[in-house]
Amino acid sequence: MFQWSKKVVKSVTFNPGVADESLLALVESYLEKQPEKTFSDLCKEALWQSLCVPESVRPVQIGETTPGVEQKIAELQSKLANLEERFFAKESHRLEVIESQLMQLSQQVAQLAIMVNQQPIIHPPNNSAPALEVVHTNSSTPNNAVAAPPQEVDPLISRLSQFLEDF
Image (cartoon, rainbow, N blue to C red; front, top):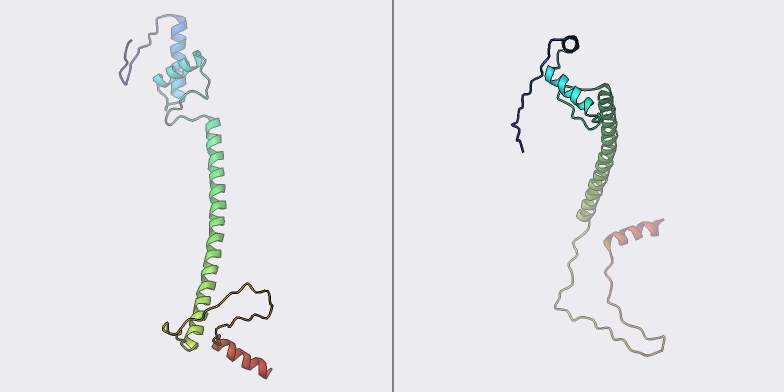
């Protein structure tokens, strides 16, 4: 089978005669009206059409656009701009919500720091003290009481209870 190089040059011969001379005149007229196209482009378009290849399958050459393609490009650009606008609005709102939450959290941390600094330091009980054992029995008597360890009084609760007693 014949292998083509990357660039293949084929020649077109116009014979002396009315048909070929009128075709050549039309080609020259067409190319004068569209200076961005070459004779090669015109031949390729004619070959695509004569071989009945649908336009949707034909390759679009660089710089060549059809009105339908330009309209589709404009529609896609509009859709993309709309999508970007909605995305940025949504992300902007999310950022504002996150900033608000961060502000609330930093205020809460500051309040906790103040509360911690105001409370006296409570040392945990020494581990050398004997542990309290809880004995469970299978007795059905309701009066079995288990000794509970003494509870430490929270200083904040004791301060608040003073206000409640005054009230």
